[in-house]
Amino acid sequence: SAVISQKPSRDICQRGTSLTIQCQVDSQVTMMFWYRQQPGQSLTLIATANQGSEATYESGFVIDKFPISRPNLTFSTLTVSNMSPEDSSIYLCSVADRNSYGYTFGSGTRLTVV
Amino acid sequence: GESVGLHLPTLSVQEGDNSIINCAYSNSASDYFIWYKQESGKGPQFIIDIRSNMDKRQGQRVTVLLNKTVKHLSLQIAATQPGDSAVYFCAENAGGTSYGKLTFGQGTILTVHP
Image 1 (cartoon, rainbow over the protein chains, first blue to last red):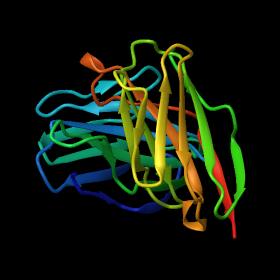
Image 2 (cartoon, each protein chain N blue to C red):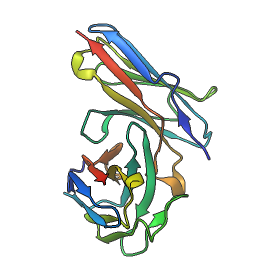
Image 3 (tube, rainbow over the protein chains, first blue to last red):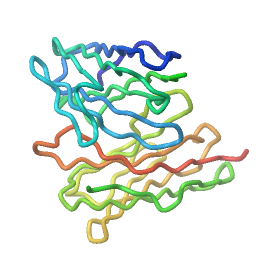
Image 4 (cartoon, each protein chain N blue to C red):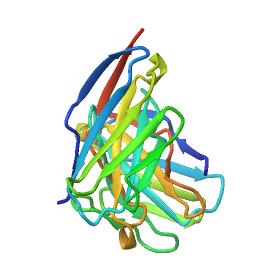
């Protein structure tokens, strides 16, 4: 299965600032996704990162708050904009590859907003 | 919206016992189910999956059972070890245009006592 490198692994940010999280995959994958995991909770899908076009966002998530880029089949970024303490979560990148089973996750970015 | 839920948020077992973690899902269109293990500070790790055309699948020390009639999924871990202590999530996918998009259950914390 694909190997995902996610950066940074953790960060502490001031409210009102933005953080860009990177997701690098060691092989070309058809689909990439971004999830949020709030403290002590389960994972919620933010959006599907589409190569060469705008991301597709799930209900409750908007592009202005979570802009996503996917310039090629191995890389994507998620930006958390104008952060507030409520944005403190783990953000995870996931990939789906029809040549392998399951969906692989990165190790996550633990974000704390102060 | 559709959701996946778990009956028991915590489970404590003795080393060597068998563990059973349950999950209820509500989307009858879901045709692919995955169990993940998440250790502290890490992303979800694939354990085992099952498609809707099966009712049982076995892996190494793990078995997943699917009951589509009552929309129920379970994960059985044989001879549970301290290294199995983690949070376990079930996830479902409806396929088609939802390929790759997972809906996660709330998670069960498994604690294995030596």
